Image 1: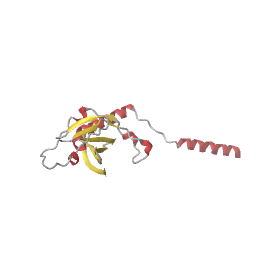
Image 2: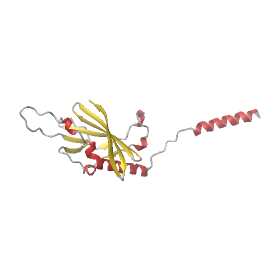
Image 3: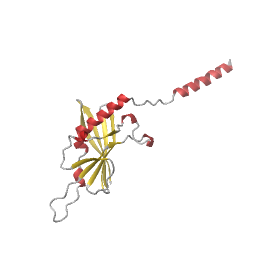
Image 4: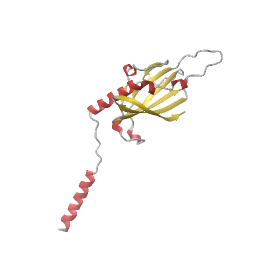
Length: 179
């Protein structure tokens, strides 16, 4: 009787330990498609907000010159998937969108600055390189981390959005880093 009880306890403990294993749910293809579609809508509706404060990177006017050539904005053409192995910050990895931007995603962009999609970092001093380094959508809330670099100057901001009546509405801008 004592042996049967010990065996029952051991079997129960093994089943309990195996039952506690964390199940990782793979992202279904349909959910991923919806996430990409929402990410594209967010960028289309708010590209002017995401690409704001570009003028702070304009070079100062030298004495005697009246007009300097405007900067060109070089927007990296892809948003990478967040590297979850770093285990930093949020852990809701299934909400991060990975996509390749297209010209049609930026049709609403209005600015005196020229915008080009680029796929490699350019070392031209007259180009402001902009990268959407993270884009996360969870329910009706989203955030985008935008990094703007020109030469040795850099600004990284986080933009927060909420979906209201089918449109992504800008809520606030969180200043992250300057360099």
